[in-house]
Image (cartoon, rainbow, N blue to C red; front, top):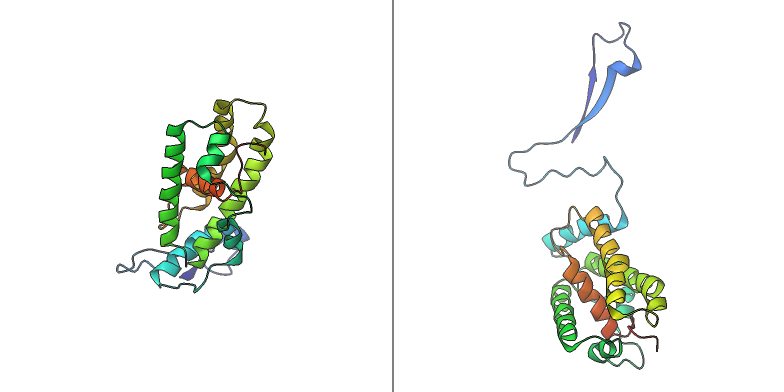
Length: 202
């Protein structure tokens, strides 16, 4: 990348500040696959992790072990009764439980492919924390006082949708995880199975 300084008119002949413009000129190499333009805008943590994940995968940079932050969410808490029992206690039908199990498994398969890339672990840990705290804040207090149909709508509006919006706002360079609503629900049910999320106030 080079900086091109353009001056209107001859230098020193009455030029004002407005006559001088600094603009960025990208290196348009015809053989380049993409042009990286990082300094024109600030980057969020989530956006930075998505970008770094591309680099880690392209260069096969892997960790030998999982980060401690992700381990706490991948560890079953004491007295865990499992996803199916949790959802039954929450009033889910068998067909809804079967769908939840499928979504959880889809997420687990995708997550397993990226489990030794540091940025993928940081992204998952960040999203797990968001899911848990939004669920505990907006959903759990209403579990006993609202019917399941209302609870599920609240989960979509207060938990799933805001996280998808954040991913869409910060994941423009994501070429690997490409999380969608099914993946976020899969995370939610994965956390339910590990007893980090409850659909009943035990």
